[in-house]
Amino acid sequence: MAVESQTIALRCSVCKSKNYFFRVNKKKKTDKLELKKYCSKCRKRTLHKQAKV
Image (cartoon, rainbow, N blue to C red; front, side, top):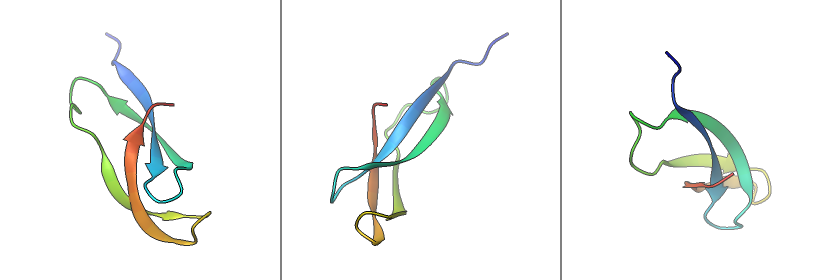
């Protein structure tokens, strides 16, 4: 039985660059992912939101 996983990217809400990539299970994770992560372009911790790859 194969797990239905999907690759997603986290996009910086300030500079709009894609910095992080994850594989998530589509059946378990239905809401959008939002995390505070470090952006190398902005050089600070900013809010990153889920985006298409």
